[in-house]
Length: 458
Image 1 (cartoon, rainbow, N blue to C red):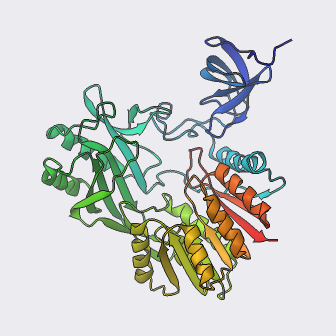
Image 2 (image 1 turned 120 degrees about the horizontal axis):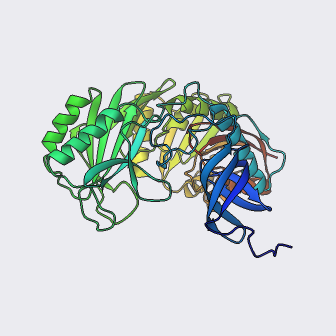
Image 3 (image 1 turned 135 degrees about the vertical axis):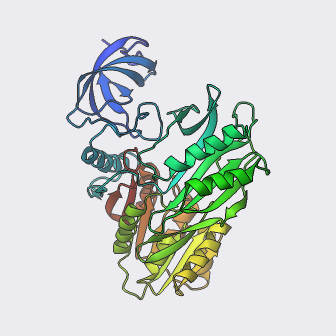
């Protein structure tokens, strides 16, 4: 008999295991004598040979040694560094299978974390062409074997995997990154070293407008003066015809946070314009903007459908950012209030409303829960509340504020099924009912999925 506290697996020993499914990080999940083992790069339906590399009481991790029987959904990845780069985790998995996996992942989170059984989770809305879809990239900069390395971190490490061509990023990066490397090599501008805190260039960020063909390049540096910046400007202007601005962001803190609070424009303007549906948006270097413009239209169309506006409703859009969802809602609402804590985002939102001639939307700066309470005191009754929080989900105070104002409907846009499930559990206990969940694949070939949820007052 196997003792409960003694795992049936020994570290550094080899085992054969059948992969039953995928975990939340896209890794294969199998069992050895009912002991759970996670195996990166393994897919459901495969028999694999592994080496146990980490053994804990209730689960372990195995290194994939050999695929004994491959899955029918296994395909060749397009990226030459896929197996080393931590940017994607599912390029070796057929795209239709990815969509089904994400639907199941959402359903599992609702049941396991939220305790919500029998919720209608629709099939994931995918892309016709799930490549070259990202309009924003943040590349860490480092040094490898004496050379400048610009790419993405390997999984669970700060080892930069140099990648000349990422197939999920906008193609403009294939031109930008070589120029940055050439500039740094030519003028001995050193990359930032996380261990010592020395060096100049920490990150390269690009923003691209698919609809209007505009590009902005942001260099994140440790110091305010960038050596030979005129040369860099000339080099980028020559390589990137769509270039509208070059911004230097200064971040001199020993932190993993990418962007600092201070920026200056080196060339052109510190923003670009992009278009979603009928609306044009001004996007600065610090603004949040959805990274997949094609699927953003799908996402917002579903949010607008769930809001079910007739032209007479008052809507509160919490975590409104630069006003993207707010303007979509304002097409069919009597009045929209956008709430956002980031001052610069609110300024951009106001400008976006002006650009698009939308006068039935107001943007307020502050914590959403406080602003919502203020609106209630002013006698403003929200018929619909729309939520689009960051990955950590909603603050409990905000969920309580929503329960207090009792809207007829809540539309929740989420990029994290786990925090979504947690927040939905709160709302259902506060007198709301989850009607249905629509996953949208905003991040093809990765473990991430966006959701739009229709919630109604019982």
